[in-house]
Image (cartoon, rainbow, N blue to C red):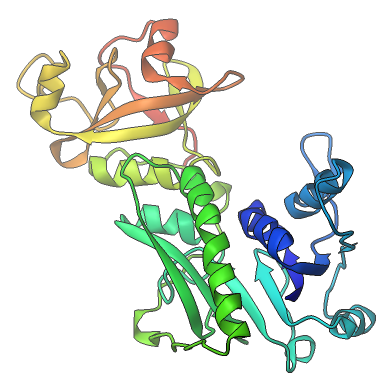
Length: 332
């Protein structure tokens, strides 16, 4: 098939790579280069960088022009896009809304990282973990005037491992997206699509995250703290301070009260009977008391200026002792 691809984020790269192998890409449309990093260096989107890298390495059998419009709906860009003789448009994490005038009479599909109608919006993967969902997936939908409200053309499903972070789940779902996009395009070519309307009564929203979300409250139960850590990793992260050290919590697991005794921790009836939430009851093993007499075991951390490391390595370097407090570095 002849395709146009609209995308900016890394989430769509596995699907784009598959489309390049199996179809004719007439053009890739992405966001303009933006300043990034501390030095504010002008940086292409992950999609633009991937295409440039593939072309430089001679990995592409076709020369794919890349467009970077500030506004894809401007009259001259709109006319240029609509002039391409594409059989379908594929949109994945593009970052601009395509107008009805641009889309008129075009078959356009969007890959979204949730099982719609659950988690419409910019951060569906994070919100699935934050809410404690046990499963998620991808949806391929038609484009609609309302955000992520199009007809469902296909879906993929994946269980959410309790130890997985949002960044890791992002990569899994990105890989899952390629075959479901291919399936929908094949069904479209064969006139076999069976669109399904979304149930509006089941809609939940996944608004964009910001640095203001980068907090943790250990007065909440351990399970809620686990979700916060995993759902916000790698960004915006969960920054904390322990004995003067600044770090981000990366991975954790909920443990039962008797597990703390097995790890050698002081029990709730031992030396720390009144340990406040956020207290390390076992510094060696990273066991933290949380709200409602629950316990969380920190598995991985990222100390400021260092690599991500197991809790045990961090604790040895800091010489932590039982009774230390873990304090959120962001006051809500």
